[in-house]
Image (cartoon, rainbow, N blue to C red; front, side, top):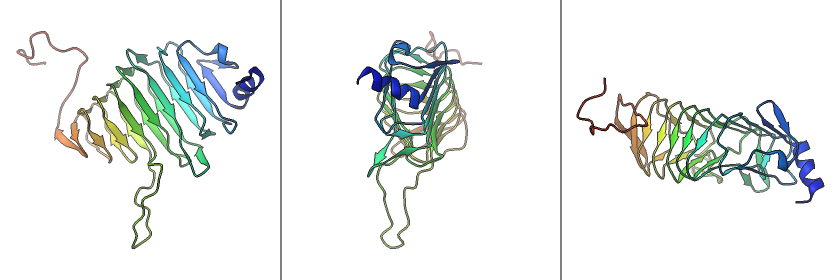
Length: 229
């Protein structure tokens, strides 16, 4: 991308780190890449001061007037990619993706924003995410009831609460809601709303496997011989 073209992209889209607006690619913190397209315009990206920006890619190539907000996160391995949808020439417009502060990433994670204006993928604070996690706010293509003509997969956004742990290979799909304090087992597919906090979800599709759970980052040195108070 030519220097003048790149500068124009930063003028047509607002990129902020803390209270400072970024006006050129060279001013981005190390570890962050932002991809644009000629149609990328009116987008706002807000990144918190103090984040660990290792291998973070924000792809605005299919975004118009979308918002991305990322708190002070920590990427220990892999990376985080955020992108939007283009379908039949129509781009994600007015969609949002938010990731709360204190989230920890232990592998590659991909978040795809919705296509429908006003909807979002919203992830709370202090979550823990394993490798190969996919959070998909759009199905990309329509599924219709052939008898009634009703759309079977309308977009509804995705909500992931605070202190949620997603295991290896988890896929979170349009319409999903994962309450705060919950755990999602490895290779599960979450495709609907769950309302009760502190639950263990697992399976394809995911279902409640246990209630009243909590998780910690540290595994006990006594292998659980002494119950946690």
